[in-house]
Length: 518
Image (cartoon, rainbow, N blue to C red; front, top):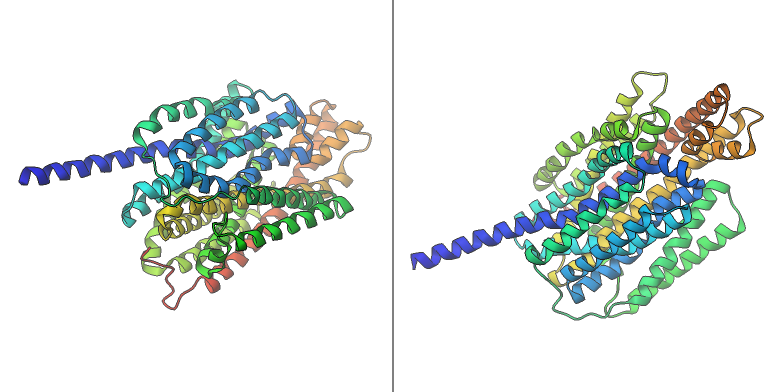
């Protein structure tokens, strides 16, 4: 009898070890996807020099991946529930590797945008699958909270580690190498995942709303294009029409979901103030996070003149704030309640954006002030994302793990992509407005157009100009970028402040605890 009990205990230990090892395997695709976002930021100057994208194409190179990813996450989460989350993970792994190869070999900006779009399709299978498998592997709430904390840390860590790897690669190879690093990681995942990861699927066979998935994409893409075009070029007929079409399609999508027995998106669940409010706060948090990343990377490289590797090393500094803040936020949420901690975290991020508006090239150590501001922003927003994920996944029914995971990742990716698109458009618009009147007269037409587009394009164009003229162009470009950086940080800070007020009011409970038992 004692022997049987001991054997059972050993089996439990072995199962536990396998789960944690399996979690480390799941972190591999998560790491690649998060790294893929951040490495692209530091490769932007090299891409601009090689492919000569316009300002709009440059934004689409960043945006298209996230928008397609966001448009398909709900569908892929439900598909994983039906056919098996591990199976979908492996299918997506193959697609991600092949599309990475296409991106690495792109010879035009259009081909790179296409490759990034295909990567978005493949990536949409990876994110909800990893989160749903974590939900299936860890049934104990305490273990699940710890596992989700690791999951969130890997996501944030990938964004920090990615630039270092990117810097090392760009010092020795072309920008295409930042995509090629995905391939060996995906190959390793294909070998190990079938051995360590359990297969899980919903016990209820649900019909997948493919039409709804198409409607999501048909709503997101024209709305995004319309907003970006209006931000950059002002009001005109085409972007307004596209914006209205996107909003109309979005309304049709919501109407369809309310009528379906098995909707792609449970709209009614989002109307519950704590669940829907948490998703909205997560959206805003990622909105500000990705916009902050774009501003920081371009400032380090194009304004301060750091190499890709040196800029990458500096960009890791904010991770120190994140490493201390995220675990502290998780502990405080147990005793203080999630709404209060999330509100405080958002206020911390707003302070960080305020610090970024005070950076001056001729002032005290601009790099120090920038990194402190960026660290405060990252610490607050990553803490918010961790608390939202723990809450929403914890209360999700096991049969809906994939769909709920898809919903969380949809809000994250959509928020991040809109952050890049909208605040990136603010950055571009203010830069163009500020630089245009101050560029030196007599510039060659191509150089003048490039210098007005982005600071990276100005740097590339200045290489073909005489020394004094090139210096004048870069001085205007740097001053214009600082103006744009301040405007973008101020806009993001105000949005985060509004989110903090919303969290304090809408997510509170009588005991000021947002499901602390979850």
